[in-house]
Image (cartoon, rainbow, N blue to C red; front, side, top):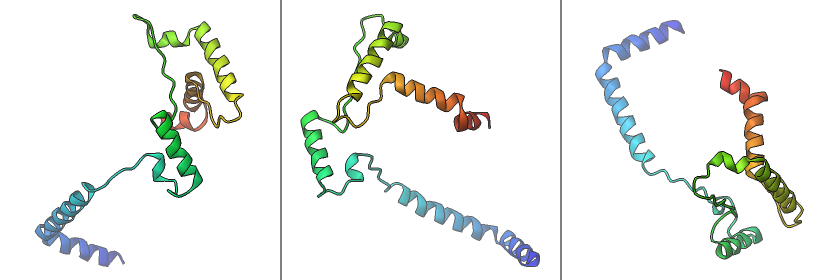
Length: 134
């Protein structure tokens, strides 16, 4: 088996120009194909268009103008992002998150505090730490 690989290596080495031409041709074909790749990231990408879930989703998007409900925070002039997590604001975010979780029609609630807790857990515990250390 080693002899076959050795002969193949020597043969390809002698015909380096053919190997290079084949490599350029394959790269050109892949480059043309890669330029035609399209990414669909909306919810309609994975919902069956005639399902009730898809129809409800379209109605929701039409009513609220998007795929998700996002609550934005308005800051006063001179305020910085860390100010969002002051003790008073944290207490209010936790209260609001609890209130939203209490709504039976609410599927998931993720506040900035929840998001930061998730990120902290990933980085400080378990697999996230292992990924950062290697």
